[in-house]
Structures are given as C-alpha cells and as structure tokens.
Image 1 (cartoon, rainbow, N blue to C red):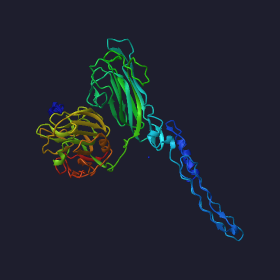
Image 2: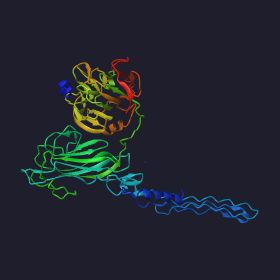
Image 3: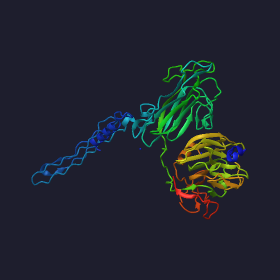
Image 4: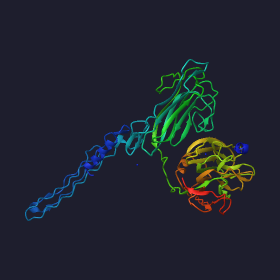
Length: 538
C-alpha cells in the first residue's frame, strides 16, 4: 500500500464646525477625481444656529443664549458656527464679555464618494468600497479574452490549425496592501483536457496540478500574488468535440498583482467549434462574434470584496524570532502521546528548502510500523511537495515544487468525515484526492526534520523550519490562510502540538498548544551532531 507513496525512496518511495466641514468634502472631491475613484454629491450638514449675546447700556453685558445648530438632515445646508460679538465698551464701563458661540449644525448622513457605505452603493461590478470611496479594483481584468481562432481550413473531421500559444496579462487595481476576494465569470468554447494532480471541482475548474503531456489545449489562469495556478477546461482529453463553459469562481488576489491568461495548443492544432452533434456552440453575452470560429474563453469580474486577511497581514501571536536549520542527519523529536493519535489531521509548517539531499526530505513525520509507512507525513521529493496519511487505501498527493530561495507555507489535511486529503502551498489548494478509513498509529515518536525507513532515521530535511503544527481536525482553507499569518496560535480548538522555535538556544523547544509536548533537539538531550541549528526566523 504505502510503497506507492514513496515510490522514489530507494526506488519506492507541500480603514466643525461650519467651513471646516466643507474643506473635508473638498478634499474628498479631489481624492475621488482619479480615474479609478467615483464621487457623487454628499449630503450636507444641518443649518447653523443664531449668534449669541447683545451689549447693554453702560457697557454691562446681557449674555444671549447660544444659538442651536440645525437638525441632522440629509439635504439641509451645512451649519455655520457664529460666535457672538463682544459688547461695546462705554466710557467708565466694563468691556462687554463675548457671548457664547452658537453650536454648529450636525453633519448630514455620510454618503461621500458614490454613496459608498457598502459595495452596493458603487456603480457596478469590479468596484469596492474603500474608505467611503468607490474604487475600480477590477482594473484591466474584466473582459480579458483567451482566443485560439482556426487559422486555416480543417485538417480532418474535427480539427483545424491554430496559434501555438496565446498569453494575455491584466493587473488588479485597488489599494496597496489590500487583498481582494475577486469573483470571476468564465464563459467560452473549449476542448476538454486531462491534467495531472491538482484539485478539481468535479466540473471544469482545477486548482494546482500540471499539464499531463498530451496534445489537448491547455487553458490556464495564473495569479502572481498570492501565487496560484488554475486550469479551466478539465475533462477528458479523448473527447472529440468542444464544450461550452459558463461558471463563476472566487479567487484571492492582491492589489497590483498580475493575472495571466495562458493558452497553448501544444501541436498547433485544435478541435474546431462543434458540439457532440456537430453543431457550432454559441455563447451569449460575450464580446466575441458568435459562433466563434475556433476556441475562446472570456473572463469578466462579477464582484470584488476586500479579504478579511491580507497577504502581508500579521493577525496575532507576535512575530518569529528564531527557527531551526537542518543539514545532514539532524532532527527534533516529540515523544509519542495520545493527542497525536487523531482520527482527522492537519500538518502545517513554514519552510525554506535548500534543495534535494538524498532520496527524500521530510519536514515532519509520524512513523508507523517497521517498514516505511507513516500515520501522517509532509515531505519534498523528486521536484514535488508531498503529503500522506496512513489509511488503508490512501496514496500520497503532490504538487510540483522546486524553489530554493524563499520561505513557503505547507499544509496537509485529512478529513475522516469527507474522506478527502488536501495539500496546500502558501494557502492555496494545490492537490486533493480520496482517502478513507482510520489512520493507523503505533508508539513511534513524531519526528521534525526526519522520518524512519525500516526502523532507521532517514529522509532528513535540508533547509529551515518554523511554526510547525499538528491538529486533530482537518482545517478549512480559510483557517489555513489565517494560520499562515499567525506566528503563535496558542491553545486553540483542535491544536495538539505547536512548535514556534522561539527559544533561540537550548536543547528543547516548547509546545505552545497547551499539551506540553516539547520537542528535544537531536537524538538525545545532550549537545551533539544531530542537533539542528538555531537561526533567525522567517
């Protein structure tokens, strides 16, 4: 069973008064004057109060009462603050005392910049309400097209020549430092294609994975930040007719990120536009002449909403002070404990990889049995990031990965209730597959930076690790996105072990989950060659 998981391991085995209020409105008007911002008339403040006291004979003062400001009305004129004048000074008399100032009228309802209190106040799809301004976040994304027209006569009953590749780029607008949930509408005519790995929605959309090497057209959406890769025409490469696609997906995208639409015909041929009954397919509502002679996808922005957590956010738990660097036969060990024997599981770690060393390189693993199996593990091998759970019929899932320059976050989940295992890289789903049944456990320790093969330590990590966690639940995609922005969770529902490596020195590193599952550096509690090295954290 598990031999397939490590098939490459030894060939077996990721936001006053009076005139001041008008000044504010004027400033807003200037701010909203850019091409990406929209201004509509604001509601004015209430009417100002009457001036106060009058002077009396002999230079004494009768003090008038303060004038009251106007009521808060959506359309009344702005209130003006009218200070009372001082009483005139008669000879020998005391100078009159200034009357109290009138109270300014209360400001009207704040409907600045497009009535922008919610996104519903903005002029259309692709806008977000940011600091009471309607901002055109969609920018150049909406209406982008992949087009692969037939460039000549059909070469057989189903195919025509076409361009080899088409690449179209757009940039998301919005406020610097903000991450948006962007809802995208995809419509078009395509030929279906099988892809390798990834996580499909069961229809046409797939997160992660790779081209499987056949000649069917690749339709791919790439996001530069946070990094994501999607395929849009998932199906059977053996199908000999085109299909219509029309679906909506929401993608997390940073302001200023580049969104790339890439299509490749592989062999410069494609299926021409015809359904299973040889009738050309028509897609209404697009900018392309119908029926299109060839294949295309049009992408439109349906909505944009600021994400709850931006890509560069730190949402709690302080910041990383130190981490552990592993080179050669180095590891940290957590003694076996019942909390580590969960029915569902999530493994997480921040990692920096220095490149392949040996057959495989484990971030963490809970070995099981005398052979090469694990209860759960997360590792790098043969240019891929891999995750595995030891259930009766599971196999590892993977995503191509080779970066040796940057920190990344990996997470792997297994959900007993849904029978699904899922791999995440930097918060994005990159692979998923079925797995069923109970996880097998024994009394082996949890190894950080290593694993066991046939009872011997093996698969040592080559690089740096930080913020290693194990949960007894399958974390959701939103939870994992929050986790990677949190240095230290501390006691949290489902968290059974958390090692943030903040000590910076010593032979042990504490578990901040509340379960007191400390990790010992190296093979024992003394200083020796198998100890990983304390370094600066990410």
